[in-house]
Length: 249
Ligand SMILES: NC(=O)c1ccc[n+]([C@@H]2O[C@H](COP(=O)([O-])OP(=O)(O)OC[C@H]3O[C@@H](n4cnc5c(N)ncnc54)[C@H](O)[C@@H]3O)[C@@H](O)[C@H]2O)c1
Image (cartoon, rainbow, N blue to C red; front, side, top):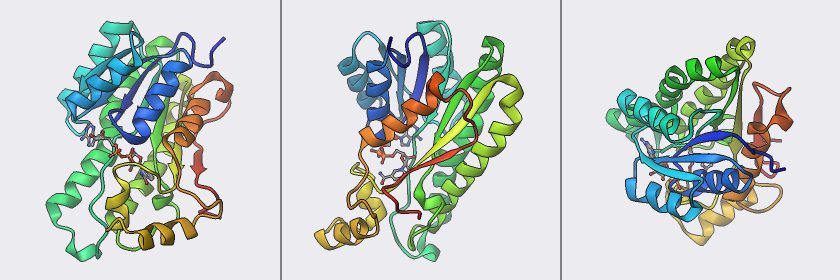
């Protein structure tokens, strides 16, 4: 018996980094997965690599029509939807807060925060009609223990954590659990944006701030998301699980 046997999951930003790790892990544990990414070829390549348990779909998670389309496509491919992982995210490059332009601020909030609202609108009625479901949001230690230079990004992750708790309490009567994972800096293409510059000194500075002494990996994040999405966590909702090697202590 695999841990997600019989489940259907939609994972956003699954063409790369943490999302790809989550999609591969969920499929390995028996789920059917919709690999959603704004980068269409990355979504398709990831789905092909996973095999028949996966479909690759392109969407901009900040656009309602795209979100509705991928939920409908998942339903038509697999017949239901049990798990949504809101993982897609972006950041402004690490720099002083007043240097971030308004359009960049708006974009970071649209992709990181508004997307969760849009997926709730699309998926919650469906989950309710099916008798329940699980929503996993990818937050960040950035929303718990902010670093300078990432102020607006950090704020989006604070919003993700608060949305998680508020959605959890409002959706509990419908048996829809809502949890978040809060990764510490991880080895993905986004890391350079968070560090501002990818130099050995910057890497050392970041790693020195993590008690367990390493960056997080897509597998670390996937393991936590797997647990929270599975029925093993059926009594758990509204948690923000730090996957951070002790960074937030
Ligand atoms: N890497 C880190 O250090 C770190 C730490 C904490 C939290 N996070 C969070 O983890 C999540 C995944 O980040 P990652 O590090 O794997 O980054 P990544 O850049 O490797 O992957 C993000 C994926 O999201 C996709 N994406 C971007 N905008 C999108 C949109 N509008 N619609 C659909 N897809 C979109 C990208 O194409 C990419 O494939 C993000 O929410 C990020 O904020 C990352």
